[in-house]
Image (cartoon, rainbow, N blue to C red; front, side):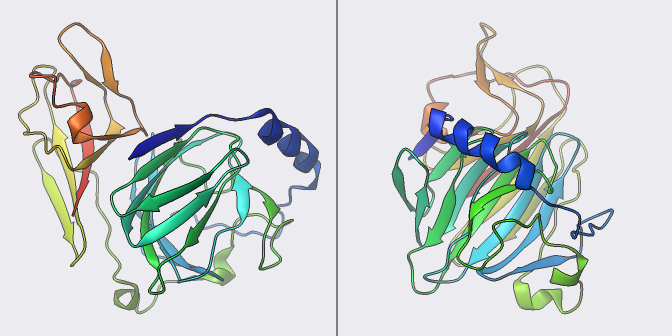
Length: 253
């Protein structure tokens, strides 16, 4: 399942009420989030890729815990559930997710993600455009509802292997990076061609675009930057065209 959630009148109402209470003054941010793990009351997260278009984060949410009910006024968010079972709440619906499901949250949509699996869940979060301080919290079981994004005091840069830390640099044309676990496989691929892209679509895989654009021969857009699609949604296109430089994330079991 891949689902897109548009903002509702309730999202816009609450955002307008909360804007004046937003406070990032106590949040000292690093110039670069690479090689840092952000410690959260619900688990942890770290940056795995960033360019001028997207910032991509790996999240681990401990069993029974959940993120705050929050929104991003200026950025779109794609969430890919890598392992376990999760509940992503919005004002409009309770969205139950299994591994390899994804949800696309347009800017201003309030949402909260809870780990239903006792062992916790792993999540990929793709933010478009990059801006970690673009955050408004409505409520939070850990008391952070009036706070901005975590600052340097909640980040660590030692013993990163304890968090299974990995990071993808921007790939050169034709270069591919991999990260594997027992439950999932993550691939970052790049192509330098405005012609038909030379990759084979896996129906069960999820694809997210980090740079460029995917279209069919008639010029119809198949995938935009920051969006996520299941392979079967592209497989009816025999030929998929890219831009001069295309960066694509693929996730599969």
